Picture 1 (cartoon, rainbow, N blue to C red):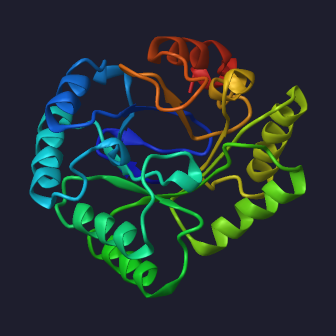
Picture 2: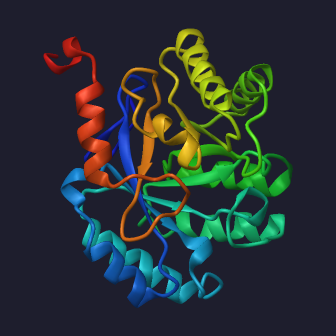
Picture 3: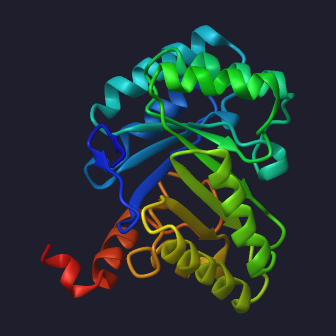
Length: 256
């Protein structure tokens, strides 16, 4: 079983993550100070929002201060690129070098690597660094325009699993209610086919809100809730997510 500080991971339980997106050190620290950490299983630093992401000294200082504040709440660092709905347009070299610098500080508990960044020397070197520092990672895919069909999404997740990772995240954009059902069907298929694999599935936007609270019934190991500000459309508050996950959790699971 994967464990990151206070948080245990299971394919049959949904952990709650909140993203922080401050543009500078002070804004970020103010943001994290307002989080209900007792109710949060993972905090994600969206470093692509950080104006000083290229200043190694500032990044290291910020990571240390976040680590001090978070205590036993694990820290995920994500650099979301513009291709997948983020803020930065980075070369492969800059992308992997940034993550290598972050991992070697030992202040981070997990990183997010986009599926499209999967090959070449830099990717291989980062994989070695992850192993040396025993740092788990999310392999993710985001589509901010569409959902795609069932076969494509199942095939994509299987390809991601073949590449390796600790958690596999699929976030897509629905245009119809059927798209939301397609994502849920994909999650069910993965749960049946790979029952112990950690998969996170999100249908983004207002239309896909259901997928942010259904993970205890249709297995999804991670959901994202709104902190001080939203990092993606359709996010609910931590309290809304926690309460609804608890209400929807099958009765027998409450007694275990």
